[in-house]
Amino acid sequence: MCASERFRASGKFRVNAHHKLIDAWLLVLCTACGDTAKLTVLERMNVRSVRPELLDRLHDNDPGLAAELLQDPVVRRRNRIALDWDGAWCLDTGGPGHPDRLDRADREVLDVSVRFAARIPVRPVRLIAEGCGLSRSEVERLVAEGSLVSAVRLGGRLSGDFTFTLKG
Image 1 (cartoon, rainbow, N blue to C red):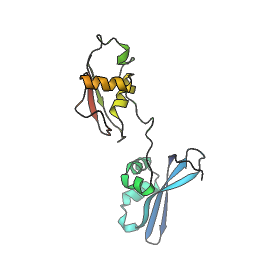
Image 2 (spheres, rainbow, N blue to C red):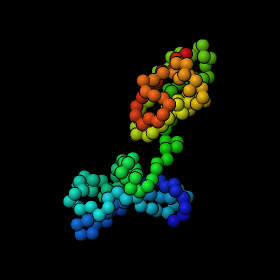
Image 3 (cartoon, one colour):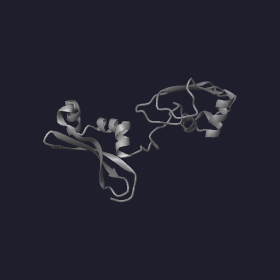
Image 4 (cartoon, one colour):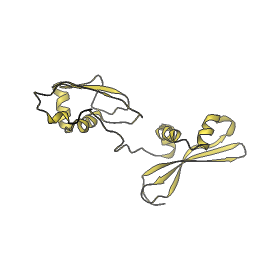
């Protein structure tokens, strides 16, 4: 195994039973060399204590289960992993041009609803800056002057749906 710390899920699970105990791992691939590593999902659990539908999903290599487990804080802590969300999101403002390409006096009110398909932590200021073609400092200035408003605090990280309004 190389020294890389970046992996991607293969979508496969390995399940091993020994008498009444079961172990299960999510197989991941090193992004540098392609070697396989295992992330522990179940460790020495009594087979009867595992929900049958979970066992079915493990045996079926359910990709949805892989995504759920990678977002599970218990699995992440047990395996000492952190998820890399770079490039996992974008903001589509719906128009062919970005709002900054218009003169400020001509810009109308832009109401945007952000919906998360998965609970990916994101900095709203960064998301808005990239989605609207603005710098982060410009977005922060718009927030400070009241031209960019939201019911949620835009300064931290969010992983749930939110809306914002950009006033002209």
